[in-house]
Amino acid sequence: MVLAIDIGNSNVTLGGFNGDELVFVANISTDTSATKDEYSIKILNVLNLYGIDTKAIKGAVMSSVVPQLNMTVKSAVKFLIGIDTLTVGPGVKTGISIQCDTPSSVGADLICASVAAYFIYEKPALIIDLGTATKMTVVNGKGAFIGTSILPGVAMGLNALSNETAQLPKVSLEAPASVIAKNTVDCIKSGIIYGNASMIDGMIERIKNESGEELSVYITGGYAPVVLPYCKKKMTHDENLVLKGLNIIYKKNS
Image (cartoon, rainbow, N blue to C red; front, side, top):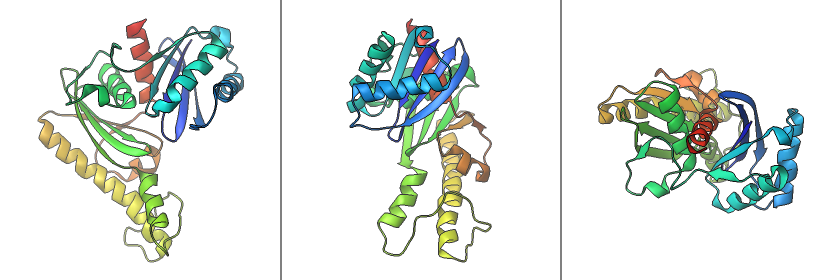
């Protein structure tokens, strides 16, 4: 089994692969103050929850957008399982080229999702990741990562409304019955849900026009199920794109 680890700003996602089969997926909260021992306990608890023996894990691969946690989590895996973790970054084979001004600055999660979209699905591709931030990445027909657009995430926008205003409350992430809402709570829900859906539709159109290629669109990330039902553009939902990309990258480097 290969243990895939995606360290995000909000969650650390763990996935276990037997070949190409994703056996389990679990999320633990990202905590930059947690120690190696604390992450060892968290990872062990996840493995026990899904009935996975640490001896069954023969490899580990990690992507991270939280650099201060990299060594902590790698040390936890080494302590718990006794193996070194491959970290996605410069020098690691991915199978795609990075055509950006500073390739080393491209987020590992974006690379992993792009690898999965390119090698598993149709190409060229537009990958939309609705996580803490909303990211839209294009991989062209030749397997080149040609750029990304980054926007405030769904929850980020929602929190900004309540935190930066005196009278707007925190609300749940669900669509109201009408776009033209008639009370404060539904007004906020309308803007967040329908507004993000419209933004995504509009950006898809702009990106497709600029790319000059017929892009297939894939959407992933924790907030994708919240917004996707209200988007008008056709796209494929795969909640585990990053983990699948990690597994592909591991195989290319092992």
